[in-house]
Structures are given as C-alpha cells and as structure tokens.
Amino acid sequence: MLYVLYDMLRSTLVDWNLDWLFMVLDQRTFRALAGALLAFVMVVFAGPPVIRWLRRKKIGDTGSTDAESLRAAAGSKRSTPTMGGILICGAIVLCTGLLADVRNFYVVLGLVVVIWLALLGGVDDWLKLTAASRPGGSRQGLHAWEKLVFQFGLGLLVGYFVFKHGDNPDVAQDMGHVLNLPFQNTWRRVQGGAGWEANSALIYLGMPMFILFAVLMVAGMSNAVNIADGMDGLAAGTTTIVAIGIVVLTQIAGDDEVAKLLLVPSVPGTDELLVLAATVAGACLGFLWWNCLPAQVFMGDTGSLALGGVLAYIAVVVRQEALLLIMSGIFLVEIGSVVLQVGYFKYSRARTGTGQRLFKVAPIHHHFHIVGWTEQQVVSRFWIVTGILVVLALAMVKVR
Figure 1 (cartoon, helix red, strand yellow):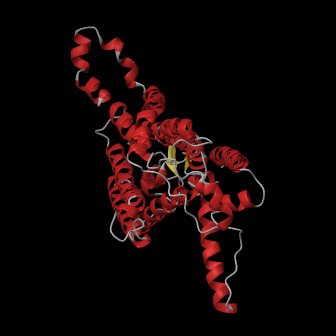
Figure 2 (cartoon, one colour; figure 1 turned 60 degrees about the vertical axis):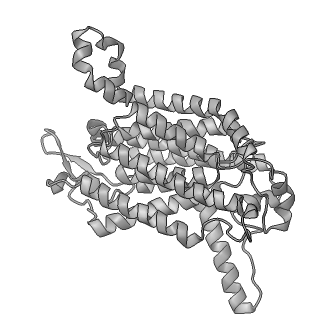
Figure 3 (cartoon, rainbow, N blue to C red; figure 1 turned 90 degrees about the horizontal axis):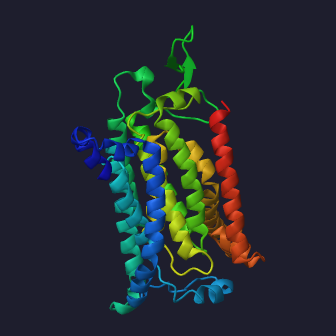
C-alpha cells in the first residue's frame, strides 16, 4: 500500500517538490530488499511475544512418534510451541502488502496462496494440538484427503487464473504458457541483430496441461516442505536458500531485456513478484533466529504448507518449474523417502507377509540421525546441499 499511495500522490508530491524523498520506491529492487529486511526484523521482534502467547495457549508439539529410536528426542521437544508459521505468513502478507504494487494481479494471487495454505495448515495444527481437550480426542488433524482437496483446489484456481491472465494473442511471443526446459533457448536473435524472436521449437502448454502442472507443483511442493519440517532449522533454513534462488529467477523474468539476453522466458507483469519472493526469504531467515537448534518455536503446518505453495506459485508464473525442482532437491528427497518407505513396506508385506523398510525411518533426515549424524550435522549438511543445488540451477540459466 505504501507504493500505491506514493503512486497516487505522485503528481502532488512533484508540485510540492517533495517527490525526491520517495523516488526510491520506484526502484523495484530497493522495495524487494526493503521487504526482505522488514520481514526479517518483524519476525525477530514479534517472535518473543508470539512464542509466549503460544505457550500460554499450550500450543506445543506433542512429541509423539511411531519410531521407538526417536521417542527420546521427540519427547524433549514436547514443550516447544508450534504454529510459529503465523509469524512467517504474517510478515510475508504485511510486508508484501506494504511495499509491493497490490494492484498487480500476480501479487494479489500470491497473497491468496499464502493465506489459503496458512489457514489450511492452521486448522490442521489446531486439530492435532487440541485433540486431548476434545471429547474422544480422536480427531488428530485433517485427513490426508481433506488437505489434498484444498491443495488441489488451490492449484486449479492458480493454474486457471495464471493461464488466463498470461493469455497473449501474439502466440509467437507468448512466454506465459511456454514449457521451459533446462538448456533450452527461449529467444534467438532476428537475422541482422535487429531484435529478438521466440524460438520456433518451443512447446506451448494448453490450459489442461498448464493447470495440471500448477496443481502438481502447488500440492507437491506444499507437502514436500511440510515433510521436511522435522528438525530444528531444517525447513526454515532450506526454504531461505531456495527462496533466494527464486528471487534471482523472478528478477530475471520480470526484466524483458535481461531475460532475452539470458534466453529465458520473460513474463509481463511478474516484476512485482520480486517483492513477494524477497519477503519470503526475509521472513524465513527471521524465523530461523528462533527456530535454530535448540528451537524455541516450530513453524508447523501453518508455515510449511504456505511456504512450499508460494514458492511453487512463483515458479509457475515465471515458468521456472524445472529449476525450482532442482533447487528443492532436499525437499524432493524428503517426500520421496516417505513415498518409497510406505510403498516398499506395503509391497514387501503383500509379497512375504512381513513388511520391510528401505530406511531406518522416514523422512530421510531421521534416518541419518539414527545412523549416527547429530541433528545439527543433518541440518547443516542439508543446507549445504541446498546451497549447491541453488548455485547449480542458477548456472543452468546461463548454460543454454
């Protein structure tokens, strides 16, 4: 709203010779950096009162687990409050609303994604953590199918509206629907060097396929970050690193000249998403202040579902799903380990009568913990791997 207010009062400020005080707001990069810093500061300073409130409400982790070898470690975190995702999501919404152009369609839809998934995760957390106080105590959070219904529903809405908003009569230059693959040149020089034209070999997605991509990305990434949220600082730190990579990709996609020089899609109207991406990174970094080992608060489903969903949303809009998946390799390994563990257990039980496991326990970060890594080693090494993957993905932007 601050940027919108400045834009509305621009002519008046010029008349009063005061526009020079606010001209810096015209610089999108400045607003993005300011948003990241403000989100960080907001989470850090709001942390103590919110954590105290969560403790008073007894919103803490139950410390329950079906892995005997992890019960001691999980039990030690029983008193640590969860639902700290309200800090992250609150900072993202407030800082983006303050510094981004909220008249921008992509910004508004991005905020809808954050709020939708934060509410979904909040309901899930609340049902889990108040089970003991309700008659029977049988409702341990939302059922998997209930969460998937809302995640798929959001993905459908995102896919439909992003596709329609990016619809361009000039199909040859329609970058909003292109299937962007690694090492593929999106643009090529017109003969004589007079300009750019779209690569004739590009694949353009129709609405059904575009919506399918959006559904899979939003639901998949949302659940992947949620599953990775199992150790102090793991999800928050990893998401911070991935979000920084998304900031770079969004900066490129929002600048037509830079995108063409790097031969990647440039999507009109996505420039303001830079502010949203930056606030995600800033808010996660601020949350890490309170979530690092030993954690004083956990983000819970309230934060993890929203973070995965908004990263996927931005990647879909700027047509960089493949690079996001590369940067999010740790998240994919986490959710993949659960799928493999469950699938192999059911398969082996059906075949031999006795269920067998591929890992000591899933998700895989607990497997490494059981085999001898300390929790700090697991988290730090997963951060390092994520940093390498982000660098690799960004390098692939140039190698085309």
